Amino acid sequence: MNGEVDGIHPWLVEAEQAIHGDPTTVHAFFPAVGRKVGREPLYPDTDPDGLIHGTVDDRGRARLLAVLADVLTPFRLAQEVIDLYRYGDSAERSGVLRALHLLPAGPGAGSIVENVRWIVEDALRTNDTRLVAAALGPFSARHLPAGSWRHGVLKCLFLGVPIDAIAGLQLRSDAELVRMVTDYAAERTSAGRAVPADAKRLLEAST
Amino acid sequence: MRIFDPHIHMSSRTTSDYESMYEVGVRALVEPAFWLGQPRTNVGSFTDYFDSLIGWERFRATQFGIRHHCTIALNPKEANDPRCSEVLDVLPRYLAKDGVVAVGEVGYDSMSAAEESVFARQLTMAVEHALPVLVHTPHRDKIAGTRRTLDLVRESGIAPELVLIDHLTELTVELVLGSGCWMGFSIYPDTKMDEQRMVSVLREYGTERMLVNSAADWGRSDPLATYRTGRAMRAAGFSLSDVDTVLWRNPVDFYAQSGRLMLEPLELSRPLDATFAGNSVLRGPRADRAAS
Image 1: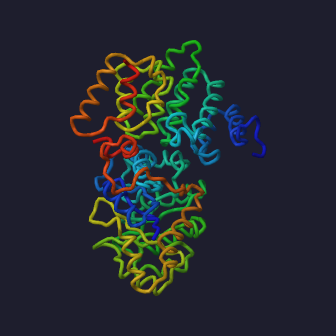
Image 2 (image 1 turned 60 degrees about the horizontal axis):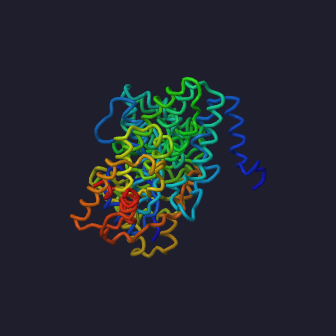
Image 3 (image 1 turned 45 degrees about the vertical axis):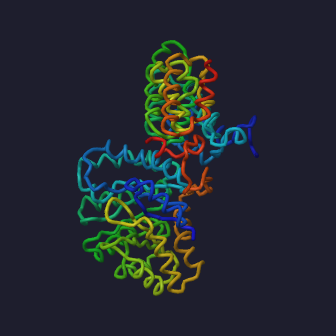
């Protein structure tokens, strides 16, 4: 592609420079990312819906958030991230969710985590597969309380979100999750319905 | 027949409506922001509504193979309530979003001063955001209201080809014809047009700049009204190409001026009439059933 710098879309390069100079310009750039750089899944062959690895615009938005993280104080950064999510459409929200773990830990870092955790919980309340998948990335693996995290995993099985989208599944999986999935499988069987392949996989991995 | 419904309020419709629409050829639509029957009393009710137009409803439509776009505005009915005027301040955020293909529905309802000032301000916003405008014409005092609408559009300086004047009838179509604006007709039982009258209008005035919509919502309305109009056109001797002009090309050409249409075909993971049979792969993308 013409004008690409190290494989980065030229529009993104310009947007990053502009945000560096004036962080408020992110409000105009953030919603436009999909229109400018595309919305395709990053790995269409193995992940056709972009639920596991995300999409081209998710990756673009992560770059814009990285610039904000460079120039804003942790407090302002948290505020800005919350606003971008609050006023974002599903694609923007997905971009925020998939970048949360990249925000700096830095001094006073606990507060960024505390301030943005509700974003993940909000996304897990939706039934939008793209948001639910994006919400269960590395940030949730590290910072989501066990109860919410387990229900997030179960929701993936309900909605058909591939469990490969869940970061740290092996690590965080515990006896309570296995019990919940076992009950879910029994419920499906008693209703005469097939048990989703991912539920079986999860149970097999636990034994 | 491929159909683009340029005006339909899907938030008020069921999943079986989406299925029937897909079956008769609807592949894309625009859901204009309007009132909900029950008046809203604060800006938060609007932002939640706008969020659902660019979020959940768009997602829901894709599960049925239909591309969902929307228009965003403070509608004329609620423009009269000062508690809702703050909505104008949040509009710029939404007008920047993907899939927001026009400012709308704007226009007159009771032709009050408040409506006029909100209408004029939103015409200016459309110019600032380089977006088309979807204009609702009043159901009461329609002829005078349509005249006044055209005057305000002219005064605003917006290019007429960026303006769609909606809910026209036999009595108002000629007013708009010479203005250069696009002409929208809602096929809506009882209060608006029906498909036979629509066919007569198309016979008399041709298909150029003509759009047909169902305006289906929570009232007594028909989400397949576009399809029925296509059938009525064919029965009256219009060619397939004429039907395609009115039901697909014209709405696409009008809203494409936004640069925000998303018309890539959606692949359905299964035929719509198949049963789920507990298949997790097929069950996944259909949020409505997965949720139950």
